[in-house]
Image (cartoon, rainbow, N blue to C red):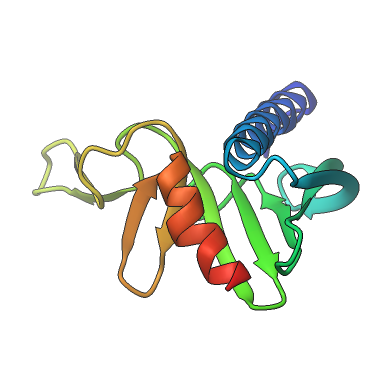
Length: 159
């Protein structure tokens, strides 16, 4: 169980990561679409480890295209340390915060009286810390960059 100071630290860290994501998204979208409009709405999240807390969602309006909403889903996700869903009426894409080298599979083995040995290997090679787009159908992740945002997140949700 997390202590109160640790809960505050986790929520504040997630809030900073989400704010950084929104700043990048706004900058990248505005660079291509100066007519884009952005609006924030507070959403309530509740996780077993943290209890209830609030973060902002980010609404994106691109004239002539379906609206988009970036919605934080939580800090504690299997294989990730934060998730934000990007939704429109056409579907959903998932962004996750990954630690460097994560996610990884870990197993342990013990032979008789010998000390337990933990074996760990990354699921994806060379994952850098930061936001990434996930493709659950193909089992891959790509670091979030302007091209990834446009081609793999926004394009499927607006065309």
